[in-house]
Image 1 (cartoon, rainbow, N blue to C red):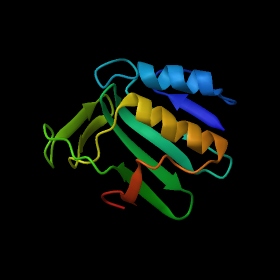
Image 2: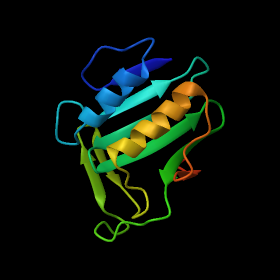
Image 3: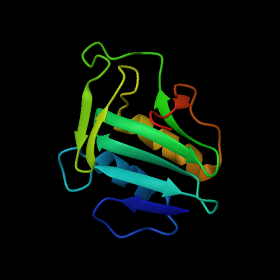
Length: 128
């Protein structure tokens, strides 16, 4: 596995502790606003944003890119709200906003080859 955090050196064999620390340190307005974890086949999970404003995607190599969503749409972030981070601006749906601790759970499931947490669901990513 390779773990990449914006603005930092790649970690070739990341530990759960390093992943947790890095993901909870992400901020959409800071030096590190996105990260990805890639397996040997080229599939990955990635996050943009940080804190309580995170977007999660996964990519199955040769198959599809997926956007994460959940069953509790945000009452303060309607569909079309823009996630602004250092790599760009992404329009989001109200059910696509995640907190950093949820992102950690998704990344650790991917790291361990385990099922994703029950709170996360997947739909094809926009433009894919």
